[in-house]
Picture 1 (tube, rainbow, N blue to C red):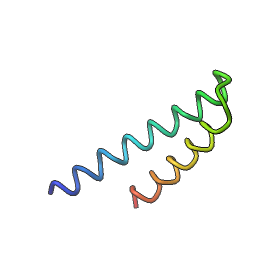
Picture 2: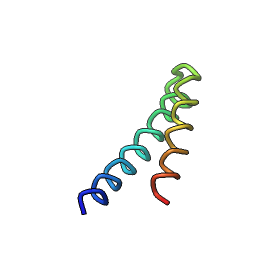
Picture 3: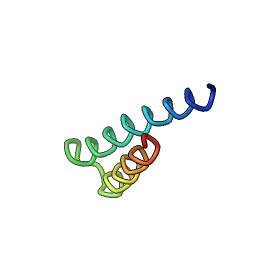
Picture 4: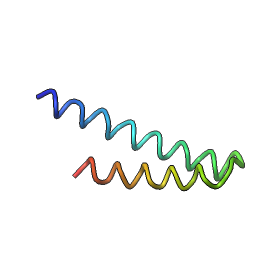
Length: 50
C-alpha cells in the first residue's frame, strides 16, 4: 500500500514539476536546459504513471 502512495506522489511531483520547468523556459525566458530537464521529468512521469 505504501508503494502505491509513494508512486502516486512521485507521479504528481513529476507532472507538476516538469510542466513548471517547461513553463519557466517558454514563458519566463529561462535557459533552454530547464526545458530539457522539464521534458525529461515529464517523460519520467509517463513511465511512473504506467
